Image (cartoon, rainbow, N blue to C red; front, top):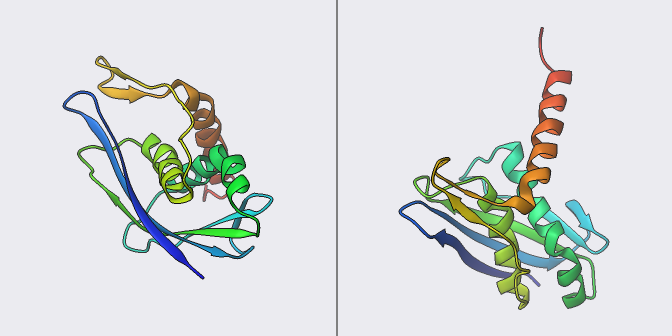
Length: 152
């Protein structure tokens, strides 16, 4: 049986913010991209086209909270992202990571783990120190992958 829910993740400490609304469903299944032993993910939000980086950040966000989710489930479970809404005036790619983790915390009923962020006025963006290494690795991996398939 599928159970659907929606969550709105937002940060707004200045006139600039982050706003990501996620609607997803959960069902007993071992299909999709493997996140952990009993947790799988599928992206089906056809109305919003995300980049490879954004989709990987969604998966990474689920990985971040997967051990907590696994304590709440007892069978293989697939999370299907059905709809994602973004406010492009209040958007940073990091919102994907924390947005899906926030959705999971509300859907499965747990407190989102603590994380650090601050607003950097010079860069005019929110900084998430815990994501710095993940983002560098992700961008490097995707860049290297694109170099392998380039038409020179």
